[in-house]
Image 1 (cartoon, helix red, strand yellow):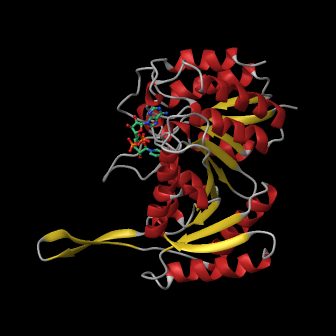
Image 2 (tube, protein in one colour; image 1 turned 180 degrees about the horizontal axis):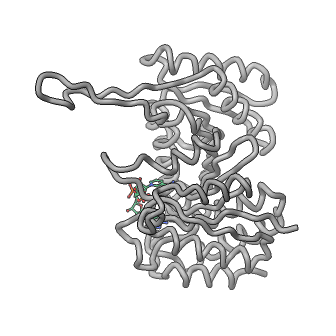
Length: 337
Ligand code: NAD
């Protein structure tokens, strides 16, 4: 029986790239029933609020979602719906693979997976203003929360991922030199878990600032990176830059029973509605979804056709071409053999 998947087209370029993706994976033989729902600005525009109950219930029911990016107002307005979804469904592992698929990136043959803790750290959103004298915003405070439980399960996820995917090394990235309690706990727990995999998976730890520089100098020294929430957010964008940009980087948000697949990038409001966005990141996210439910053969077909299309003259603008989103999608479909 075909799996039912909640489909969130999202905001900005979301509907353009999600529609292209659905067209491609259906042409490749994906067996999914789609359950389309709204979230983010598109839901607000329908006067439903940024995260309608119906959307939450749909994801709860289907346990799988393919999601376009959602816009988050900066500095004011509702909190990130992306973060809310990850917290609500306890999607603790954010898996962000970056693999070179085409020339045009800074490097060739990059193959790095960032595994980011998705539910703790500074992104728990425990923050407030402190008023002084006449200024209600004289200071602001955010709390970083790290738990043994959260650190254990993300470290274990990273090592299990490395074993399952034939990876050799896990690098734990932290800032324990300065944040001795929160980051210290994350590092200590990671080292304990690493000991269980000794002899099978190599382990090292690095400070985040050094990691950011080393990624630019010599990215080939990295294999699987496991890190806390905010560092993972930043480093995964950096890693996507190594392979040619955000348009090429997919992500999966994985929980115990439920998973949401999406691009690393956002709603790209600067190019929304122009039909020029690169759909590759969402197509790759859909491949992760296909593999997650055992439709590996279809995923392989899509990955093959996508790689051929990316290396043809039909490329979107971010990759130096002039193809529209739908022309690129047609090209991918034309590459199925
Ligand atoms: P962004 O990732 O949307 O865009 C950054 C730059 O990359 C822009 O110049 C954009 O045009 C380009 N870009 C991104 N995706 C592209 C694609 N597929 N093809 C071609 N070019 C692409 O980051 P931003 O502009 O900082 O964020 C816009 C909104 O998206 C914000 O509201 C932010 O909160 C939200 N956001 C959502 C998610 C998510 O839904 N998971 C992730 C990141 C940001």
